[in-house]
Image 1 (tube, one colour):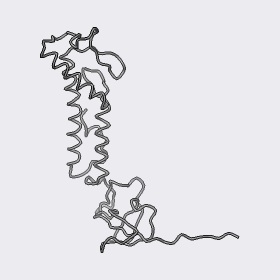
Image 2 (tube, one colour):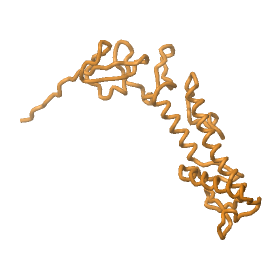
Image 3 (cartoon, rainbow, N blue to C red):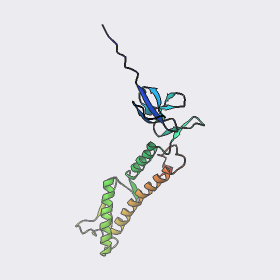
Image 4 (cartoon, rainbow, N blue to C red):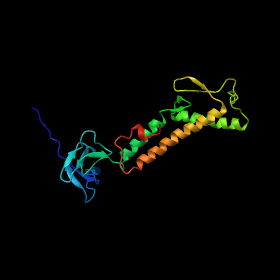
Length: 200
């Protein structure tokens, strides 16, 4: 003989933001603004329209808000999810390489650290009298070169290395400023991965 057990209905106490999105929820009362609802699979995937809880439309998850006038979902420029998405896109682009002198170079964190160190050495060499065209400015027994993204060796004198390091720094700084500008926009752009929003 088979017995069936029904899981008891569990009340969830939810507090919503101005967009009807769950801001906080608990199995215990939190305050007078609580909206009591039967168990939801995931409160983050629902919103409250003032009368009932409805599931978020497909693809309209965290970081989106419901426009009460148009009834359409749009990016919420003030949400933590939107700001985190901008930071992720910023970092992806900073780490995704850049072009210097017509050649593509890698710009992962360790690459940028190496560039900064080599640029500092180049500046010291220039101060000590290293001349343009001198590829042994680093004091080694072979010409100084940097490995491009395609694994070719690109010779660099001290002046070029210094400019290279400065360009790498400017590459990162430009993307940081672009991300800041996106965060300060009054209306969130529909696609933060649009190349037009970022430095080329």
